[in-house]
Figure 1 (tube, one colour):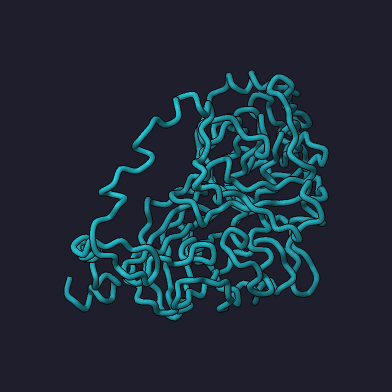
Figure 2 (cartoon, rainbow, N blue to C red):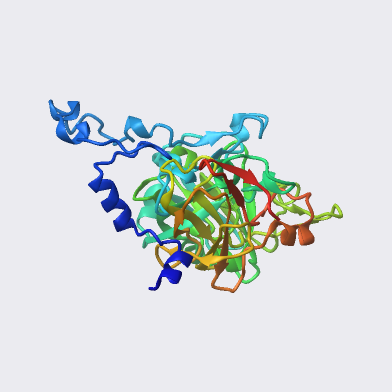
Length: 426
């Protein structure tokens, strides 16, 4: 690679050289623009408290917990967003996480009447309607069917909903944090429907939860027989209460409201029910006041998680890792481009791993930052050829009255001091 190529790739000052220079100076960098301290580092040369005695025994925390120094990596609510926390949302701290798998304890929640407690022994799932054999399954029954493991993202249809009219919430956790990505274990819905025997007239299924809201959604039979999953584990352990313990539905790539928690009933029907959650809610209001329905799929989207308003640049000039997440409800992410100047120029980012259908993909772009202001954007492309739109492109079709399905490009204004702010570059 010649000098010009090195400069254009942002790696004119290689990381090895950067680290060698710091080591030679005996440097301890404590913050952005910090002076280098000469002399020995006491954290290396002196015995520290953690090395002078015993630590916790193996039974100190029978269920492992995060260390206290990571206490800020938590879900957060926006108090004014809903009237009450019982029917509300909190947000995944995606700015502070790495990789793609979301720990259950950090995964966002959305409830319509609060998270309920139900014992496995009290669980029942009924399949009825246009079937040959109406059936009722216990939790133990479900455990006896052949299992599958699949990793999927779950995104609320209202993710980024506050951003339709302009930049609102200053943090990636709050603008894009109604999403998580977990490995689910369970039984395919197709397996249970085949056990019951779907009749020819059955074109839809209606799925309903056991909580007080009786949240219910209609799903075309084609989707139900394709990749829907009756899940009873996530990330290798039982579902958390807030995620539908003991059993929930997974509807890969489709809006989160359809992923019914505490799943209790599946009715095979000739047509859709057109319930509250698919008529007055979870429909997209257009500029002329009409609404479109059945917009189930979450289109391709991406966001830079660092640097971002909650993850400012603190280390000063030099090598900088730009990273974020991309996903698509129509398939796998094949490409992510990153812009440093608000969409005027784009560089292809590196995918940490090949994209998986309906799962989060981590991307990276390594640059050499010298304190210049940036307008950071990410733009995702999936394997259908769909390219994530700008806000102007989305508004040209949808207007500004919508709440749901905002997958427009997000912009962070990174200032010379490393701080970042949510702004709009349409």
